[in-house]
Length: 381
Image: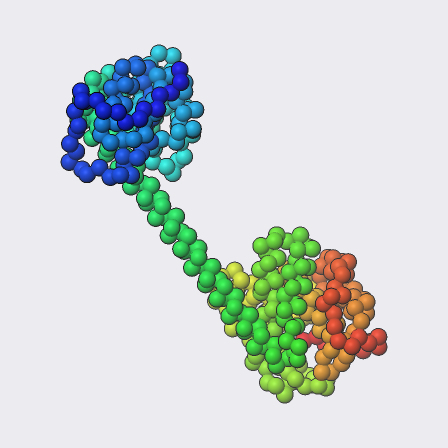
């Protein structure tokens, strides 16, 4: 049988019930679904609800239509008869259970001539929110329905407020993240301005490190974190005296020891960060001069004990240093840089990362006046 959707009509035989609670417009607009095999019961209850101001009532005398109607109509309240031939109210409750979201308050009011304690407990266990005996009192059924719908409305308002609050929290978190990223970018720029005339070294290292991480199979989110954190690898150079940091000639052993402290200075500046980005930047700043064979600094870490992100930045940093002009030498040609990186595979660099790195096209990241005459030693501090 087709479901009946009842619209307001005037019927002087049904008394208007005065409720102690004021009826809200939103409550009166609630969608109510009635499932009862007795057509007379459905007709009477529908008229009562319409006279009380409820404007959207649907009904069916076929209990097998309960789930299809529920999914189509999306009611705010289900009024359900318990004793019906074929599929009874318990069967309907069982079918409705999986289609009602767990975090949604969807009240079911059971109307039944069977008001035994066992029947009540079973209905409540299966999801009913209230039970009313037949024949019901008109005043009571209206009040029960209003109470259930008011509770439903409060849950919906709470859900809306929670969603609004969550959206505000997300927006605020995004603002803080952007502010943090901007601050870190400015820190990187502050460190770079004393060591790189073009001001692009840290940004190139970030971009290349993110691309290399992706080529190594890291997740997009992890690759993006590395892209953002890598520019801070030399942050500690803020604490290195200009006379050493900007020296055009070869560093003395003592000066090189001072240069090496930029790793621990950078890590100290970034230490204690709560975000994954700052924690990652700290590891990179501390370990990007560690070497695969343990001959690096500051901790002499060996192999996989060196954080992966630091191993990635280590190769990229050397590539960028060699492929661009520096105060103490001209840039190398890209093929020569890649050959030198291959030579340092297994000693300075992680062999697997080298194998992936040298297969990529990095020409767009090279610059300066390339030369083919290579010095015997490489100092990429």
